[in-house]
Amino acid sequence: MSDHIGAGPCAPYDALLLLSFGGPEGPDEVVPFLENVTRGRGIPRERLKEVGHHYFLFGGVSPINAQNRELLQALREAFSEQGIALPVYWGNRNWAPYLTDTLREITDKGHQRILVLATSAYASYSGCRQYRENLADSLAVLEAEGRPLPRVDKLRHYFNHPGFVEPMIDAALAALEELPEGVRDGAHLAFTTHSIPTAAADASGPAEGHGDGGAYVAQHLDVAQVIADAVRSATGTDRPWKLVYQSRSGAPHIPWLEPDICDHLEELHSSGAPAAVMVPIGFVSDHMEVKYDLDTEAAAKAAELGLPVARAATVGADPRFAAAVRELVLERAGTERGRIAERCALGSLGPSHDVCQADCCPAPGNPRPAAAPYEQGAR
Image 1 (cartoon, helix red, strand yellow):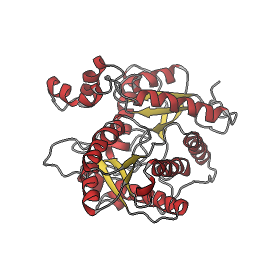
Image 2 (image 1 turned 60 degrees about the vertical axis):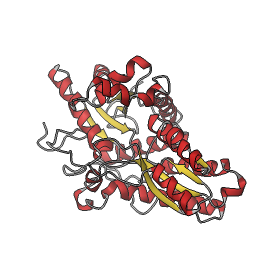
Image 3 (image 1 turned 90 degrees about the horizontal axis):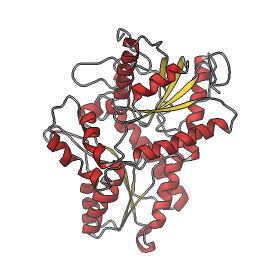
């Protein structure tokens, strides 16, 4: 079944790892999950119970694991339909199936070259480098156990790949159709993503692009423009749009990216906007931060204001996204074999880099080793 080194269109790679955040799947798992997420920060257990109320509203179950199972199946089908026998595995940073356990399984099955798909499309510390740090941590555990270490590479950022963007265009158009006809033509577009500290945004991406939001903001703005242009072409209406943020956490004295989606809805209402469509371009699937922060909190704010809103679906396990991942795997494999591969990208920024520089999305405080690939001097 496996496509080992030296054979097949994916060579030299012989496995793909879907790497995600993880989430609880029952009330008893909420606080232990949050302890994993916040490990080292010294947050009391009682405070974590308060923080976990978002999960308890949904029965203590995060949708993310079920969504990753759907994506896992879609990826396997995408490779199978092209006759490509590439095993696809799944591991999480913060909950079962844990990344370290999955890497043990991968090495037990003899795989030596692994490509990693992270469920985060944009450049940032939390969206890229931290995943690479987690990979380095897990590989260090395997090395301490005396296991043979595979080489691990991470797929490039796919924020502007057609297979990721085109489903979001269709979702935005579908959400517009959900609005009452009388307000549809005047509806504004609110493109949402996860807020991060402004210092982290400014340092995102390669060093030459640091400052004023860095790659994180630039990439989101570019995708938002592509979607807004496509919606205008499809509807014949040039709609006002803005990139806004959600899911802020952390100390209140630390500056984070703004405006918050709820504040933006208030601004739209006060300015006379008749309606809005929230398009969560920063998220791969409808996980808890989408279900709560948009479908619950922002929807409640809109209802309070009397502002009609609709929320576009995320990409999830859309077959076009699964096919895009297959293209990215084949693209990277061809590059590793010295072949010039077509690198698909929409917008003005072009395709992202394959290998992160050592100064790309630097870690806050003391830098830690990062894998995929290992940075020079990290091992």
